[in-house]
Image (cartoon, rainbow, N blue to C red; front, side, top):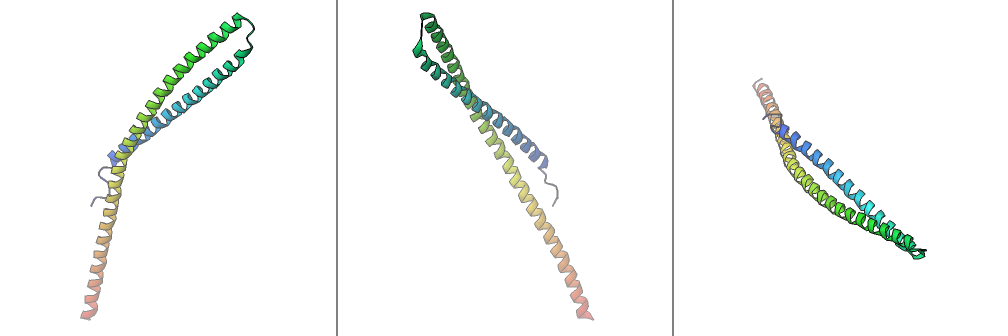
Length: 144
């Protein structure tokens, strides 16, 4: 039996794919988290601006507050869309990582079985040599 696992190159490739998928997943999760935080901050800021609108002095101030709120709501809608897209990308990255991990694990199991079979073959060969030595030694003693 060959000591070298015949699919070692493919296993290294699969492990590299898994690392790349893992990096992609981390980046997608970080982007999604960042957008969720920005969205929460924007919602908080929009809520605070609504609370401060109660003390409006003139119509120009009221128009400025209305314009600011409309702008904030537009920004919030954009953040909602970006957050939804980021969640979709994170889900796709998770699926990609899961698939890459599945392919790597299958080869890792094959490598473990190969290593175990190699060790078992070495032990059988060693035991056979020991049995041969013991058998030859026993025959010499019996013949003396």
